[in-house]
Amino acid sequence: MQNVKNFILQNNLIKPGERIGVGVSGGSDSMALVHFLHSISEEFDIEVIAICVDHGIREESRAEADFVVDRCREMGVRAYKFRIDAPRLAKEKNISLETAAREGRYGVFNTLFKRDVVDKIALAHHLNDQAETILMHIFRGSGVSGARGMEPIRDKRFIRPLLSTSKKEILSYVDYNNLDYVEDSSNADNTFARNYLRNVIMPQIEKKWPGAVGAIVNFGKAVKEDDDYINSQIFDDAIIYEEKEAKIPLSYFIYPAPIISRMIINALKNIGVEKDFEKKHVDMIKELASSHENGKRMSLPFDVVAIKDYDYLTLASRQKVVPQFKCELRCGEFDLPDGRKLVVKRVKDMPQKEGVLYFDYRKVPKSASWRFRQEGDVFTKFGGGSKKLKSFLIDKKVPQRKRDTLPVLADENEVFVIAGVEISEKVKVEGVPTAYSVEIKA
Image (cartoon, rainbow, N blue to C red):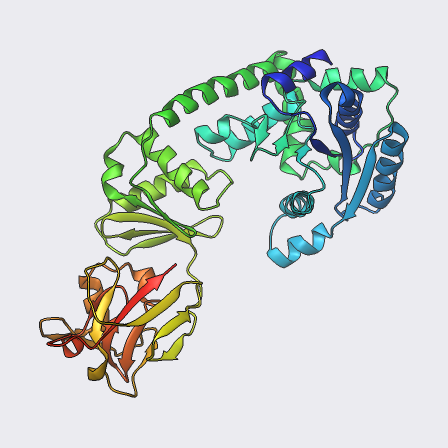
């Protein structure tokens, strides 16, 4: 399999000195991969480690895991086996068995990275898998990002050395090297979407169009080239990223549709959403941005919510239950439930500084304390005029999702300070400064 070597070098998949974990199920593909990588380990100066994850789905899976460990050790490859309970995980999280198995498997891989056991994980996806993946993404409604197919390397640590190698070539390698392997009985279960595509649809396509697999993969490569070029034209410097949140200026939505779509996908990836959104969800976000209703929100897959906030379209983690917070008025640093700090200091000078407010602590009732807002809160604006706190925050264009976690200094329902926003007319500093400063720090 000289083409595999060339593919590894062309895509810079492996570096000298690395420990390469190989996901080995016991099937022909993964057994061929671990054998091949071990055969070039001295030439590439790498250590190969077999990783077998038993998903706990089938009765014979324990024996198959033992088979993998035994065969790998016979090759001279260090091997580890792990067992997860994918059926239980699927039930607890209300997800498909396929998704649960994948989450559990990658959970094992990520633990090995954290424990510094391996530097990379090699996966046995091959050319036929690539063609199936492209079709699956298209059938599920993916946009261009899905039609690209799988990348040779993902997240700088998951590699696919066999991605340009056909299933036929792999089976020839297995036969030539007399490699033992096991057939996963679940591969014949066509209730699984990929199995149905592989066992029913693809044979019919290849019978009609013998070169279909290569044609589909070449289509994916052409899509990737176009997609990479369009992505290179995106300038998203004005997108504001906070923890698990991206704020896209509404002015960006005047750009051509291909630019906007990729901007949204990039923003989602930057807040930790790695899976491809379907095109219909991206279109829903665009439609929300063009609507006239401020504060409108919509729920999206992968625990994401999109919100139209005044001049921004915000993508954020789904709103959680509002936490509780309360502390007395004194100098110091106070921990907020979301990890930020409320910092209160006694000051003599009051320089203008973004995010810092000054108030006369002598004018604050002794019974006042810091807390989050409550129903019925009122606020006397700086300069005069009383208003409901909710209405004041709307006027100040404070995003709805942030209003409930703004620390306020209040006595009963009267608010004197809204940290990071404004102070009440009733506590303004006059004459000789006797002030406290207040700010919120990340």
